Image: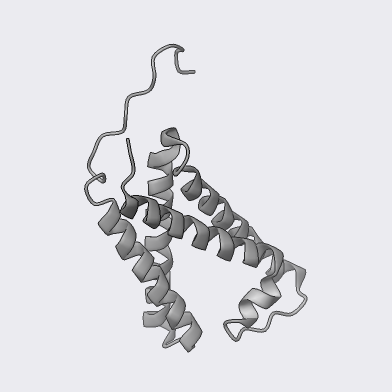
Amino acid sequence: MKLTILEQTALGLSGLTAFTIGASILFAPHAFYASYGITLGGDANLLSELRAPGAGLAAFGVLMLLGLWRRALLPVSIASALTVFLAFPAGRLVGLLLDGMPSGSVVAALVVELAIAALLLAAFRHRRWQPAPPLPAGRPAR
């Protein structure tokens, strides 16, 4: 299954974005959230609750990028990218409806996430309904 330039771009951009944001939250949460105008204190519980999903987002970013080199991981990479970049803007839109208008930097993040989601949907629209490739024969599944 060969990737088109659009598919490579979409997967690469989504993977780099997810990994960069996730790693920033994981290793530098104060600086990351300060860019949104949010001041974090030293509460270890809050920092732990922020770092954990940051690590998850970074891991999803790695999965997205691995699909560029390991064709066996491509379906997982596509699913990860679509899940992350559809769920994040959906969550922000729920917040907008329930909590009101956030700061301009948060709205900008929403716009970027929507743009990446649109790019992913456009790039992989023809693959969404294809069946998964069969498992290779040779060893029985356990």
